[in-house]
Image (cartoon, rainbow, N blue to C red; front, side, top):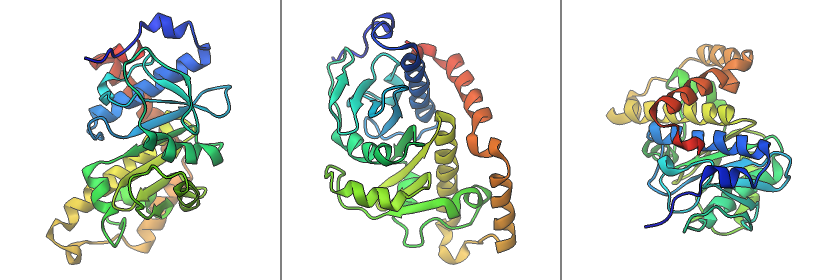
Length: 260
């Protein structure tokens, strides 16, 4: 059985205070996505820039479930996957993580956190020709802000990075066709709220179209514009700090071991 983590005080003594705080926050985000059912066994990744260390990010070990991730068992790697600091786990890395995430981090200085998921709803909408439709308030908040990237196979080819970067552009959300979802942000809270709203929009769309595309009722242009303007004019809605703080409190009540 793989050893899951070193003692937290051992890893904590090897990194800066800023990095340790980032590790705790990132581990909380892994636990939150597990709690909300946005996981695919040991697949997928969430990455976070290491404060004060350009070109270095934190990522999960390949083989851990999201509810096993802790501050101590995260890897520190370069954007191309070279290991900078290995945790005391008998596990390696999944190269798809740094292929996709490294691409985003390499060009987006504002993308401190990148999340990629394979949820059933997100993957379902990614396989719909129509893409994301303006069928709900959640969709109204994000629908015009989402890019699309065509599926090229399992993400192991670094040559795909340029196309993925171009498709994301300056946005914070990407639907990976026939694959899943991607969201990024300046903080864990911001990246999470983008992903959550996109995920909820996808769940609602899958439910709404269960009776056929012709039964889908799109929002009016006026309603869509009103929804978008509310989001744009309210930084709190975009940043997700209130939601993030509430979810961290929930994780601390359920299982604070992510902090170890």
